[in-house]
Image (cartoon, rainbow, N blue to C red):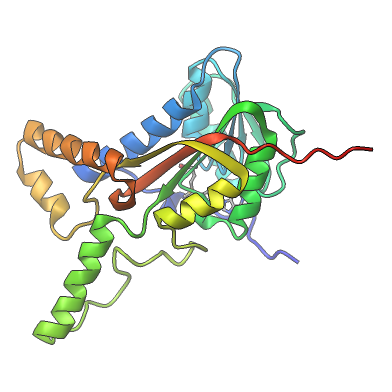
Length: 264
Ligand SMILES: C[S@@+](CC[C@H](N)C(=O)[O-])C[C@H]1O[C@@H](n2cnc3c(N)ncnc32)[C@H](O)[C@@H]1O
């Protein structure tokens, strides 16, 4: 039996860009995810674990016939409210788990799942479902936080050095490289690939942003002139795109692996 809170309000786990590095990261993550879905007029696009529905609304604004699937009724209500208040174009809302999508095979030109796979108790089953409902020539897009990023590695090494060399205890509380309590999986690139490739043939694996969460990083960026901060963030993002194992977030996209057909 699955015991879950279907009225859960997860606004607190959807980070908002309050600092330059956060704003940059979330804008790039969203931009890459939506671009990989190639939305356009008449395209059918599904957003799995749509949360507050901002990505589904953006896809619909680009002309796609968009369905937002989300199990939490509270999140869906908030999403409906905010999209209607902003005068957003029509999105269809469906209450659904990611691993039991209520759609026929091959229904969508694109399916996105952003910032959510690590919240799922059955991520591989969810990716299999995402692949099942994606058309054979369609695209499935997964955007996943990397807990083996350069920032996580440096943060961990600094804590080890502090304890080992300086005999000073690591500060209490969750460290940036620790997985939050509401995550089921600690993702790093090999695990992302392994899970995704069971159901998808990947043709696009790109890293987004480098350095997010490094000690004093946000403060350093705030102290720089706007142009210099953006140049630095963009330069690191260029590196992240080429070295996804070090990036803060990884976008993986591909088409469904061919399903075995059953003959009568
Ligand atoms: C961090 S939010 C991300 C929401 C949105 N994709 C975004 O980028 O803003 C994670 C979402 O996953 C949903 N979720 C958690 N477990 C789920 C599951 N097993 N199946 C589908 N959605 C789930 C939560 O309700 C929540 O809305």
